Image (cartoon, rainbow, N blue to C red; front, top):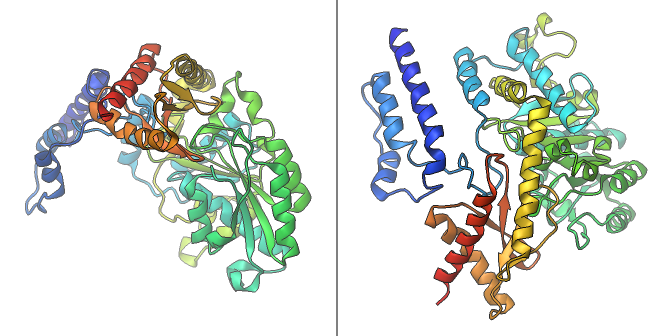
Length: 472
């Protein structure tokens, strides 16, 4: 263990230096061909290498080529900088290396606690056992929609685990054009078929049109189909818009639909008093999927599935073969009875450390800082004659585009589609693009409370400079 102790000290210095130097480095740059090939084509080693050599290789061949998301000028996708407390806790969790499937050991009890903490942070009801940590919202969505499928089948008199979907009329779910793609993937994997995932209309604000949702449900029910699910968003991936949950929850209660909320990124916005009103009614959902590894900064990977009905969730997944019987597990049983994983990593420690280090107050301050920055960026866009704000800034995503006066819509789309990569390659800021309706856009996502207004101004300056370079 002497070698490990020395190497651990070296690793701590290596990581500390890396994090400290990030703000002064290019946010992202393409890897040189030789550096990329050194990783891609590395031969399988015949002999082992000392720990100090491995750390030197990490410092030389890996850390210099980051994605960029630790930098305060990274505005791409929804990828946060890692919380320092979570980084440290990850090492301790790896040292313990348990399977957090169940039993009477610290990781299991800690997971139950942090799942409750997450529910409390976003104001979602949390019965004991009504949730678990997952790899991310994609997996959490599968967990939640599986429970919704099970309830719909049971209400129709079918045990879907025993008889399968063939014993049911086609199940139908309802989403919008802004719903994250993980919902469609979950529907496909669960055998529902993307053809039975209806896209309902949205209003000018990008939010669910409750009247169109009602009409779609009534049409499908009249056609002999079985409506069972509606999906709402607590922060859409394109613009960060938050659906009006109250009317949707009313309709779901009336029609017997399971209301699932995709809160992967935006649900934690409820901590900001300035925008908390947007989340009214979130607590009425049947399930909520969200990612501590997004706005909270918990190191990847860490998602969370929260389900109102514990027994519905457990009944969807519980399968306890004789070799897994464990009287020490208590009345809630194993986490593997509530999801798809049997061997599960110790995700809870980094969540616990991240939340405990900041506290509710510190987390709320960081989130409020991000939304304040986003609103300020929206103001800067609106004040700039070359730029156009494409949607109201509701959370911490700003959707905008470069709009020179002499281009038509087709040319504007071509320019704005090319802009994100052009900006990224310049290395000073990082922004990504998306499509909103028929318009190509840039979307800046603010998750780092260390970002400054100077960084926002640099982002817009880089967008305009890259646009000039792209035009003949």
